[in-house]
Image (tube, rainbow, N blue to C red; front, side):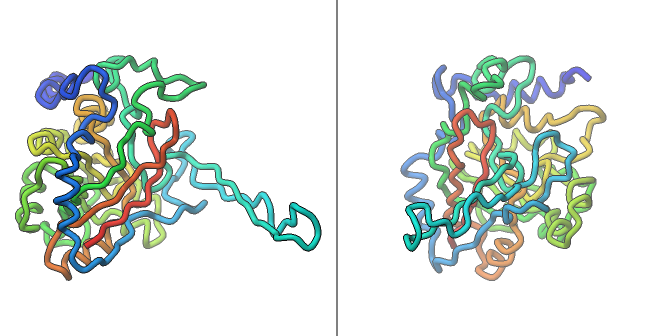
Length: 308
């Protein structure tokens, strides 16, 4: 199905091509300035550290629906091996094979294209089999550290978990922002909790994957208006799945990554953070979420930590 006019109209309104120059490769991460980071550090009060990554394991969130996105396969390559001779210090080593976006991750700006173009009007064919992303690779992402804001949409709906068919709207984000008692501002990283990850944590990865609540076609304008640096949530697909418009697949990905140049994250565990924020009575924190710098990668695993 060709992209509808509604998509193109939104794309025109949120487009950031050329905003930071014709050679820019990091998009909205430009909004995380030194001043933003200094102010983010002021969010640390108790020093409580909340991990947001899922464990990397072979029975992870991937079900095989996405070709090639395999769960981590961990292999021992050496076990107590005395490589310098008998009686010397022994070493143990291991290796892993996995999709870079298999578990908790960032989507890089080369992850999605539409109409033959990537962010900042780069050609989609700049991604090749041998070199990956020759531009916009995830290694270009600056150290992602900023103020994090938890928008607990499930809590705003007075439920622990949104239903599978719920398309998160700007009105949902407004309600969660109001409940958090803070205004999302330029350079923030927004974490949107749906509660969907509870399926996976309870042992049902198929229910986690489908059907899934997620961000709707109207939300990119909400993030663009506030100059958000990046957005992540606790679902496999980020946007609502199946799509809200029949046969219009991944339009939010295309608007966020291609038009805005805004990294987005999936499979983030926001359950402990939601509890910690409710206990503290505040939903802002210092967030460290540095992407692993895989050269030419279209995405990267991340082990984010929220510091309250």
